[in-house]
Picture 1 (tube, each protein chain N blue to C red):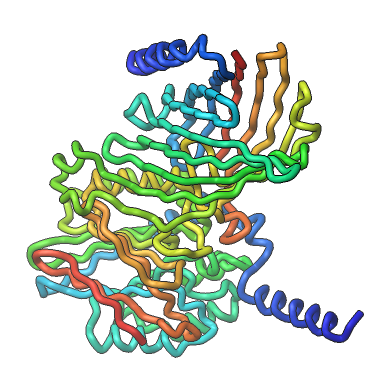
Picture 2: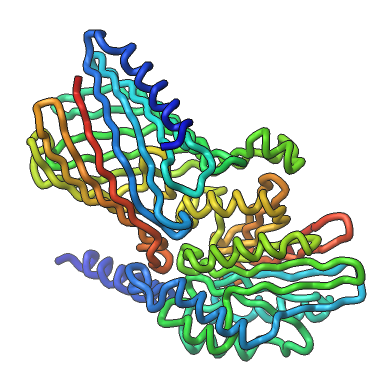
Length: 244
Length: 281
């Protein structure tokens, strides 16, 4: 692990332990993505740490992504913050989330996304989420100086984009083990256009009442359903979720 | 079943069938050939044919570009070629979706191509050109969809790179080739212009598809690092422009006859800068 990665990891653990003792639900999660795609220049490995803090119907969630193997010179390559509130309309539960994510995909540029989505886990074999995001590509100040770029030309804002997740589970979601198939255009640090769906097969197993292991397999096919289908990439995600 | 329901079903079937003539459902799920295979065939063709190098006597010159002609119809295509010949364009670049992929349409397109003695032309495959096994027709007529050409003025040389994004991705082989080309050659040229079919940004509400974000991110990094001056794309059928860093990103209107806002692009390679304007048909 790079020295910088270790520093970020320790920093996160310090932040997280400061929450401990608060009378509310705290969930810690870590996972590793291993995969490759047409633009990755070989196999990549990323390590993600997330924590969520629930107080009544409010959930605050934050995470960060560290690149262990990649063609990105940055160590810390992603940060995200999410705030959500649960609602109950008659017997229908749903939650509304607002989020911000930063993707430091290069030492010259970064990408930010703001957005909101509404989701429900009813019926109990399904997860539905629908929302929108606003993406901005920005050239950082170091690159602006090095390449003599005007600040006014350093941002490109895209039009709003539709985001969605549809997941079908084999068993009700509160069971100890489960498997599911998901179609989405959003991940923690990547948001693709709505016409670029990504498919993933998920499995989880609760090894202790408060500890769950999970394994996902993500498959990306460029142009599927709308242009001219070509393989793009895949990755495997394996992780642990610990409810404190 | 009511007569209105039957009429609605028949109308829907008619719409689906007419849609299928232009869009091949098979291509949405699987491809006849993948982007790496097309790249290999393009490179084989490039190796058999010499690099296109255009030598001109003027210090300024004009490149014409168009995309999404979707032949069938050839009215706008003829105007485009005639204007380019009349105004002595240095070259024309045709940025994909030239046809619907049908063999007949490729044949019609070929019949309307000007002689390469009178006008240098550079094509790229778009997604529609690949439907109905269209790559075979494209390859037999044009040869390559990944290549570069050079224009030499008395004082300077400019680099033009054509990339195949018809499958919604450049693929790893083509991306490596592109990276190496920029790294080894970009600094030898004054201007660098990229042409590819698939637009990179979502600049308006639209259902057309960009490449995956991971690929766009790598390309944007390369554009800054290697001072790419202009990226010309099509695919979205409606013009849009934006600037990011030193790179001007242009999405062209569709040239196809049915498009009320059909236009083509003139790129002026001046001594101080690159300028452009759209010519409405």
